[in-house]
Length: 258
Ligand code: MN
Image (cartoon, rainbow, N blue to C red; front, side):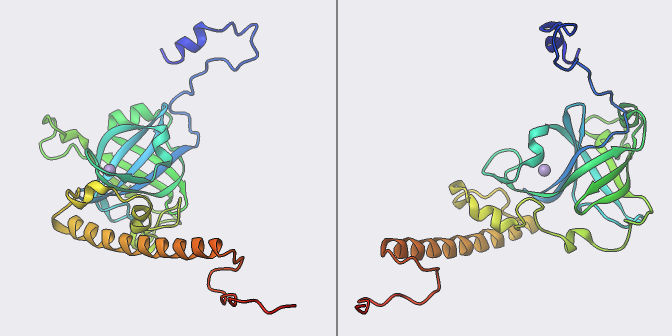
């Protein structure tokens, strides 16, 4: 039972600490959600909804669409820890190797009383209040090709925007491509942390993602070089004792006597 140890260690008739109340699933209460934009072997968007202390996760290859007539495939993937919700960075190698951007975050509110039941049924209606995604949405399980087949037939869902004031034909992934956390794009995230291992073994070498990653690696290298050069100038200026902003005219070698 959840919070059993917490309960066992305390006497709540004597302790002022909060009782071990498990937030009942299905309460129509706002909780954390985020969307990670993840350039791995393929570009996709990971929708994550907090539920029962974890982040329920769906990988959406084409990303969310604000157009209610567009149904986006969403593959249910493994739950992630809550702490993952703020993650942004580079996964150098192994599973999911690539660049992870925090593309949107905010709160979500179930439009149903029992989230577990809705998941079981394969029909979860909810409201998003993020920076980019808002309003009413639904995740519907399709059963997939060969429903009931082992290996993920029932992992296929569709992410669909409901018709409301937040629906429209704006391509939100094109319109707002950058990080909600850092404001940067993939190359900015990569420039912060370029894994050495990618020189020899990039996570995506072929296809669209491979070409995209190659271009991003180039842009990140340019950014890095520019930053290194700026840092060098700043260091040299500091060493010269010149308390002047970068770009300001240099002090004369011999200051005129006063
Ligand atoms: Mn992913």
